[in-house]
Image 1: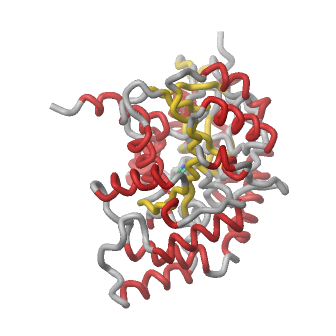
Image 2: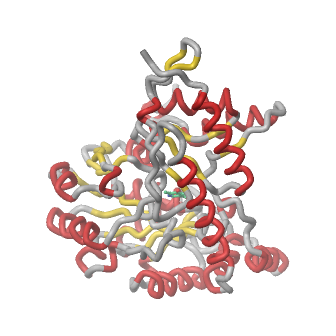
Image 3: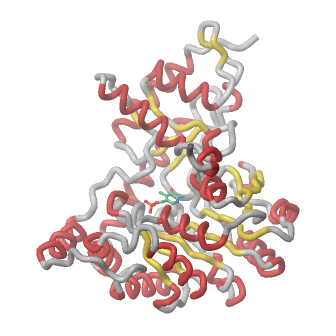
Length: 399
Ligand SMILES: *Cc1c(COP(=O)(O)O)cnc(C)c1O
């Protein structure tokens, strides 16, 4: 008999569509994937070299549970230089990816009776991590016309005595949108007034376009900083998804609790990956603008093309590597006697009829959209767009 908590959660839906696409690929189908959530670039050479050096030097044993001091110091410097945030070592913990950082936070903070506010569309793991810790996710809708930023009035309307935290994600996966200063200031004021934590997932901070600026909510004043858990990592900024290094900066008592939890579950993140992360943060950063420029080019191309497809409209995303077109005008159209009635139907239709993999908006809590990752080659983006255009052209108007 499985534990009760297992019944509350589902496998990550983005991984589900990816595995179906992989199965089709394995059977020889030329599947073009817009489903992936990781950079398609290789980890830079200097970072790999640092890891190889660590192995050769025998840096292959347990480390301090919350990360080695040189890595904590590199993180502290980064948070200071990039985000205007000042932290001490005891306010920083390194974990096995930002997902693990978020999970440790959930374990340390959420419990039965607690409510955690999650603006929708949301990243897929947020609600399930809340559920796994017997707390209740409270969803608040956001709107395309507000660039998917939560409306402070709508947020305030959700706040109760049980509100424990708000999970913010800027730049956002899946919407690609970023929060502006004015909205963040209003959110910070609400958090301070009502005393709830802000878990701020900033993993895409290096991918912000059109001269926009990433702002960390924790940087406004000491009151909001004392309530903020700043989550970041190397996966997206340095193409290091497989290395599993993420980190949290926040109040020392919470970081200590997270470290205790980590000491009883995973222990330290991989010693070798920690050495690689030190190099990623302290070494040359020329990789970052190169990756940024390539993503920027693809973003503009993909979004402009999506807007020429009948039935789709797509706002130009300001960050991350996702396009999030509104596809609701397609719903009701027919393929044979099958009706495309939802984002799930549409994603399945495109996978089966066009061999194009993407993720339905329902996975992120909004059925009016689909998510396309442009962490894939320009050539595949071009071929994929042509296939989507053709497949959608084969649909007939609904009754
Ligand atoms: C990719 C991603 C993460 C987690 O990345 P890790 O590989 O676990 O560091 C966290 N949040 C969002 C929104 C992401 O897209």
